[in-house]
Length: 334
Image 1: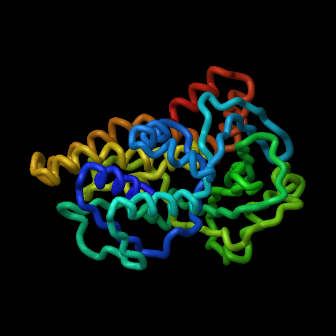
Image 2: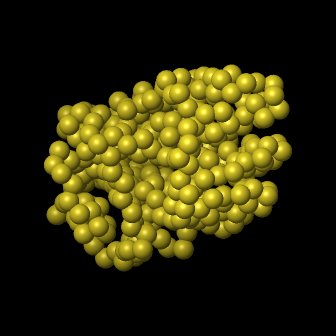
Image 3: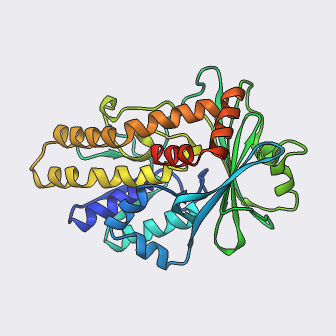
C-alpha cells in the first residue's frame, strides 16, 4: 500500500519506478480496513481521495462503540469521519492506478538485493518472534449477517481486542490482535475461537449468526509493536517497513499514506541530482520521525494499558465519561 502510493506520487512527477511484489496481488491482509487520521489529507493532496471515493468501494464511518466482555463501555461520535474500504479492493485499485501511469510491477518476485541507492523498502512489518515473552499475532476475516451498533466497534477480550468495521455490500471486517505466551497452534483451524470471543461475551453474541467468507481469512504472526525511529534505519523505508503502530489506534493505513507522501519530494530531488542518496534518505527519516514519534509514544501507552486489567478499567472509564479524554486520545494517536 505504501509502496504503490509512493510509486504513484513519483510517476506523476516523472520519476521512473518499478515495484517488486513478493506474493500475488491483490490479496486479503490482516488490516482494520479503515483510514482514520491525516492519511486522508495525504490521499487528497496526492489527488487520490476523490477518485477512490468515486469507485463506490468505500464508505464513511462516523461513530464507534467500545465493549468489554459482557457490557458496552460507551458509544462515541468520531471527531473526524473515517473511510472504510477492503484492503483487497484498495490494493487492487492502487495497483491499477500505478500501472495506468506506465509503470511495472514484478509479481511473485522478491527483491533480494541490498536496499541501497535508489531502493525504497515498503515490504511491510518487521518480524519479531517474541516481545517481552509474548507472541503477538493478528487475524482477519470478512463476514455477513452481522448487526453492528456503530460503524466501528472495538471489543476487548482477555488476551487482545477485536475490531468490527462496516464495509460496503453488507460485509463486516472482523480483525483482531492477540497475544499468547504459548506456542501458536494451527490458526487456520482455531481462528473462530480467537475472533469469536469468549462464551457469554458481547462479541460472541454479535457473531453468533455470522456467515464467514473463509476465502478472506488471513493471519500474521511475529508482530512487533515497539516504536522504531526512521533515523535508526540504514535503509530508506515507508509504511510498516519503517514502524508499526498498534492496531487499536486505527492509524496504520494512514501512516502508510503519510510516509509515502513525505518520501516523494526528497526522492524527486534525488532523481534530478539535487540530492545524493544519503541526503534524500536523511530528509525522509527526519520528516517521518517528526511526524510520527509523538503519535507512536501515545499509541504504545494505549497498547500497554489494554493488556493490563487495572489500566484497561481506567481507560474504559475515561473513554466513557470524559469527552476531553476521548478527543485527546483520538488526536494524539492520529
